[in-house]
Image (cartoon, rainbow, N blue to C red):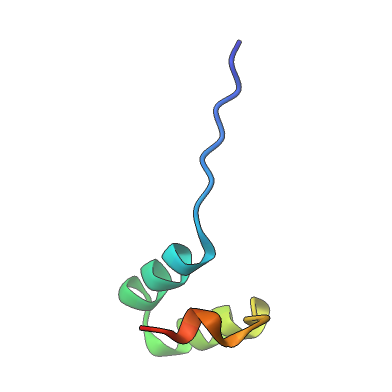
Length: 43
C-alpha cells in the first residue's frame, strides 16, 4: 500500500481560509495559527 500525503503551502491555506470563511472564523484561525514573519503579507 502506498501512502499518499498532500502538502499545502501555508500561504495557500491562509488564502483559502480567508476566501471561504466568515470574518469571525478567520480571526479565530489567525489566533490559533499566528504568522511567524511578515513575508506572507505581500499580497
